[in-house]
Amino acid sequence: MLPAIEIEGLTYSFHGVTVLEDVNLSIRKGEFVALIGPNGGGKTTLLKLILGLWRPDTGTVRIFGKSPRQMSHRIGYVPQDIHINRHFPVSALDVVLMGKMGPGQKKFWHSAEDRLIAHQALGRMGMGDYCNRRIGELSGGQRQRVLIARALVTEPDILLLDEPTSNIDSQGQGDFYELLKELNETVTILLVSHDVMILSSYVKSVACVNRKIHYHDEPEVTGDMMNMFHCPVEIVAHGVPHRVLQKH
Amino acid sequence: MGCLTVCCKSTEARHKRWRTTVNEDLSAEFEKWFITCGQASGNKMIEALQYEFMRNALMAGLLASIICGMIGTLVVVNRIVFLSGGIAHAAYGGIGLAFFLGIPYLFGTIGFAFVAAMIMAFVTIRSPQRSDTIIGVIWAVGMAIGIILLDLTPGYHVDLMSYLFGSILAVPRQDLLIMGGVIGGVALVVTGLYNRFLSMSYDAEFARLRGVPVTFLFLLMVAMISISVVILIRVVGLILVIALLTIPPFIAEKYAKSLYHMMVIASILSAIFTIGGLWLSFTFNLTSGATIILLAGSVFFFSLIVDRVLKKG
Picture 1: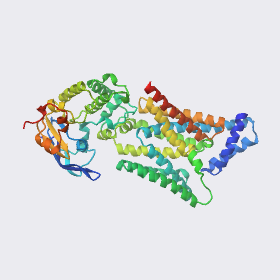
Picture 2: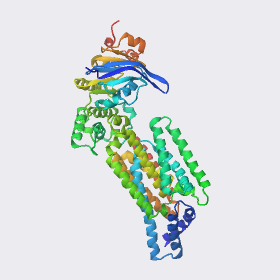
Picture 3: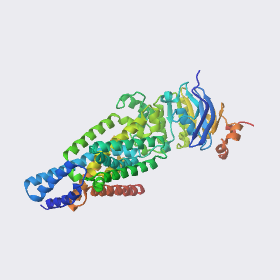
């Protein structure tokens, strides 16, 4: 069976600085991968290359065996909230409806069915009462849920999330991870996170990105990652339970 | 009667400026008004003429407000105010080109502004980090080309002041029709592609992933800006165009529930500023374009202060 995401010999540089070098990664369908690594290590860059928004200098990215541009409509994407204009005059529902835009869509306006689906997606994220609120009136965590609902209505096969819980409180995070776990029954998930909780209890594997990539098929951070990639710096610094670390 | 004298006085002042202006038809028409006004003040006919003259100005202001409401909203939410300023200034090169080559004003200016706009748009897409510099260069070079070409054109010259502040008091009916046409075209495009424009403006990356033709929409938007700006400059002037493209949408953005709503509020605000400004300029015998801008600017700063106070309180 074709892997959901397959990356071979990928190199990417930006303004002459190599961001990613010789990256090889193969993610099976149904995986739940946490992408960890230091800031500036290339995590977000990797997501954008997988999405086909940027093109690699060398190497290839394949989504179910096809190019990202052909497959981008089957990937749900939750970007970091900070990159989006908060003062934009748009309601939560209208943001979610943007997920219902599709290739070859001829309609001028969204159908009643699309609106219903968008409503339900917001409801699923516990945001049903906020449909008509302006996006700027919501808290950071609420906005994040709207963006996740927007990704869900695209009915994706793969879900890419860029630090989705950075604005959500710990109670909210627990609920959110339960939701991801449930989604993971049908959807392959790749998530950028600094959060240790998710490493310990939810993900199936961990990939560490710091210019190069180190993929580990177990939900733990290996000694290799610690030494070569400086990945678990935050984990150690936060004094977090050692079960995320491999026994030496 | 008092009002009439003031009208004559202010038209006289503008008459000198207008002699040297862009459009011969305009000049002739204005001259007619001027002469009738001077010869037989108090005549009912003149009052009617005065009414039409004012009506054209008001109509031009209202039409400009609608265009600016729609286009300005896109400009503000996409944060391309600088690019729009670049187009408006570079368009002066087109005026110079039109006079130098002796081609019709609208063809020359729209053509030149369109090409300049497309270059700036492509630069913005290809290297967003560098785009402000390149836009600044095109902005300056466009204006310089206009001035040099006008130097090289014998005889008839365009007054820079009329380009900057326009002549809303002397808008011929033909220009009103053209503005109406532009409104129709822009409204059609914006309505038909509303969801796509919304999606692109809010989150272009996500829109691209959903198969929305982001690059095409961006170029289409910049093309609409360039055409609208050229039409509006002739009527209300470069400075007023930039003011109406930015100030009303900025105020509207804070209270609007949707992009469409923002366009409506911005258009209404523009209309209030334009009509209020015209009324003030007649009452106090001031230059109309600058008065409209100062009125809009005062409301702009007032709204900022009100926001501050409300947030603190």
